[in-house]
Length: 381
Length: 67
Image 1 (spheres, rainbow over the protein chains, first blue to last red):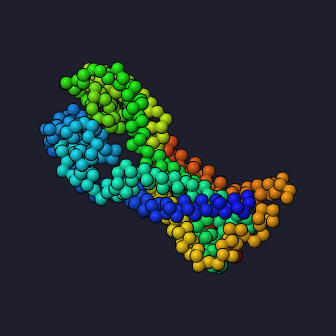
Image 2 (cartoon, chains in turn red, green):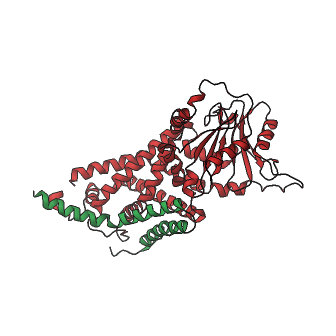
């Protein structure tokens, strides 16, 4: 590569990094506790009360009835069962297509007794605020899309970083950290070594983070695409006035997909179903198939199955990006490794910033010799 | 200005420079995918591969260079 080309790649590395670094540091810092979100939430929430004597295991219809009694002017939107505890979460609002989170009530019910749990709402917890900050700087969709662009800059910075890495390493063995030269050289070598060893992880976490920022557009795409197709025959049919049993709908869906469990249920009128359907999202049992949910639409007036499909590829990419971004798919050891890699990423960002801040005090000749170490073949200079 | 010689020399250099980063990257991707496709041993393999990268990083930082 010519010296001019190296210089251009170096400028790409410098500017993409400079623009994104502070945001990426914020993402690393807020991402660190989010890796352990389940554990932290587990400590913060009080344990489940004892099951009262004579309590009967509630059906899903019982939970829905309780939620309707608790919020008489509202309709159910979504229901799911916690993965760690015997707890149902059910969301209600005055309109099933409500999008304003502050107007949606999410209550928790003991899945062993049907008792409504007196727990603080999830969207009031500290972890939820950190999540909001991480996902969109508390600015909603514009914030999310902005962070997505910072993710794209990170990917450009990684590629250009790998390109400018080559000329540094003509005379050095991989991973050399020179400790007896200047402090600057030590930081530079550390930046290069940690950056290159964490490159694959950073690329995966960066790329899946970018995909996660596209969740809202992907949802819209799915609603207007597959969901609209599956419910096309119902477009001019008035919605049912009496809804059939949710438990029966679940059984119907599971009969069509043996061996699959319910991930969550969207009630008629929500953005994840139609005005006529229960959408039962089914999941498999491996970490991979648990993420690749299958929507089954059950007619909420007749209780019959309208259709069950695989999600389209773009939606699968979104569902798979979540675990690969948050590292919550391989037990606690993987989470700890994820946290340490996150700290390594912060070290790369901080050392890069240090190298740039210290730059102006370094004579021009030193800068040049760092980019082009002595002994570079004449033809390439 | 003999272009073929220059290209060959530089691609040999690149292979040498990127040999280790590429190997580490592939092992890390294998670790990331492993925990996704299964539990138990698949998780353990993922811990080994990704944890090994962390240990390598610490060893390289702690190692005294001759320079």
